[in-house]
Length: 354
Image (tube, rainbow, N blue to C red; front, side, top):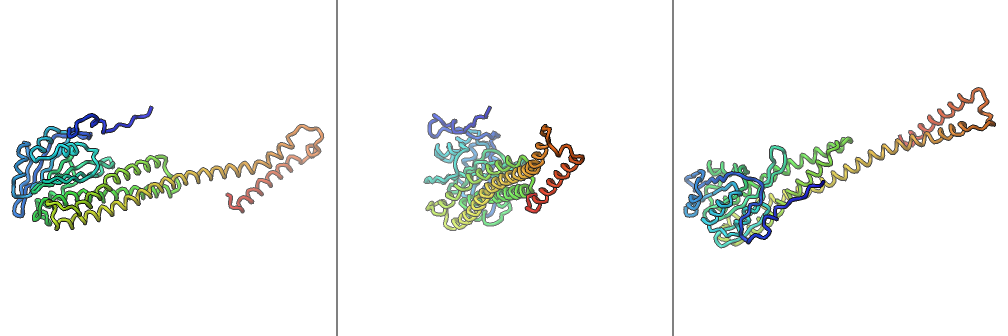
C-alpha cells in the first residue's frame, strides 16, 4: 500500500484572505528577544509581555526583535497590530511554505528567506525566516528555537565591525548575509557527500544502498536550489529599489550578498549535474558487471558446445560404431576433448576475451 502525499496548502482552502493559519510542523513556546543599541550602548533582554514590543518602535536607537514560535498565532497577530503590519503580511509569516520574496510597503519592507542547516542526523532542515524592516527596527520571525544568527549577536554585543554605527538596513543585511554564509556550509557538505559516492562507484563494488543515497542527495540539492534561487531576485530588487529605508551606502553590501548567492547557485547547478552523472555512472557500473557475468557464461557455454557434440555422437546406441570397439577409444576421446578445451581457452585468452 503506497503512502499518500500530504500537502500544507489544504489548510488555506476556503479561508478568508488574511486569515492566519500556521502551516509548519514545529511547535514551540513563544520566545522574544530584543537587541536595542546605538554606537555607545546595547541592551539585550527577553521580552515577557507582548505589549512591551511596541516600545521599540518609538526609540531613537536601532532595535532587533527576534520572535520564535510561529505556532503562537494570537501573539503573532498582536505583534502585527503593534507595528501596523498588513494582515496579508501576517498570513505570509505563518505560512511556512511561502516562496522567498520581498514586498514593499510605505512604512516598511517585508522579506521572506529560507534558513538552511544540517541537523544532528545529517539531514537538511529548511526553516522560513521573515524580516520586517522599519525606520528604526528589524523584526525577525522564526518557526522555532535555534538559528544561524549567533555571529550577528556577537557583533552587536562586542561592537565588532560597522553594525553598531549603521542603521537597521545594515542590520537586515547582516542577518541575510548570515543566512547566505550557511549556504556555503550546506554546499560544502554536499560536495563531500558527492565525492564519497564517486569513490564508492569508482571502487568497482558499489554498495546496494547507494541508489537510495543518490536519490536522497538529489532531493537535498533540489531543496537547496528551491531556497536559494528566489533569493537572487530579492537581492537584485533591493539593489534597484528606491525606498527610503534602504540607504545608498548599504546597497554595496547587498551587492556582496548577490555575488555570494550567484556563486552558491553555480555550485548547486554543478552538483545537480554531478548527481545525474552519478546515477548514470552507477547504471553503467551495474551494466558492466552484468556484461562480465554474461561473457563468462557465454565462454563456458561455447567451450562445452563441441564437447557436448562429441559426447552426444558417441552416446548413441547404434550397433555399428567401429570406434566403440577399439580398446583405447575412451582415452582417445578424453584426450580429444581435453585438447579442444585447452585449445579454446588459449584462443579466448589470445583474443583477450578472458
